Image (cartoon, rainbow, N blue to C red; front, side, top):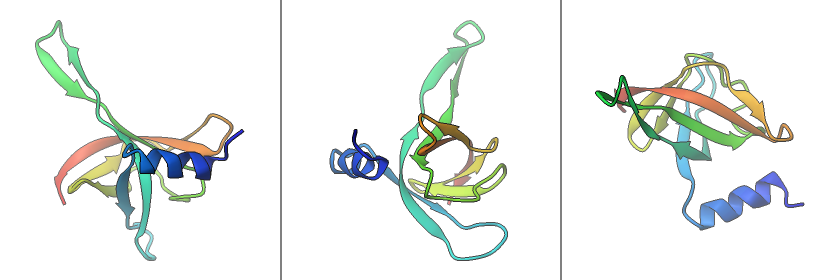
Amino acid sequence: MISTDKFYESFDRAGFLTEAVWKPSAGGPAQSSKVRFRSPTDSVLGGEVLATDYSIRYPAVKFVGLKRDEILTIKGFKYAVRESPASNLDGSVMDAKLTRQGPA
């Protein structure tokens, strides 16, 4: 079985990861990590409106302490964490749902 670190290294080399930066609101230095950024767009209200559901998946050893309402910068935009990140797979990765705030 491949480790999470090796998997993310391979995913990064293939161009599937994006740099995310988090400056903890409680203080401390900014942290950066490569994440799997998703922004799928769905049709809602009978096709009348398009809605984008932003999220990231990242190694659990990164962004330790990330929680609801924290701000991440990804691809030049600020995103607020919509709800506390959830552990996924075997606990080695985390998923966080995001809300786009605007330009960084």
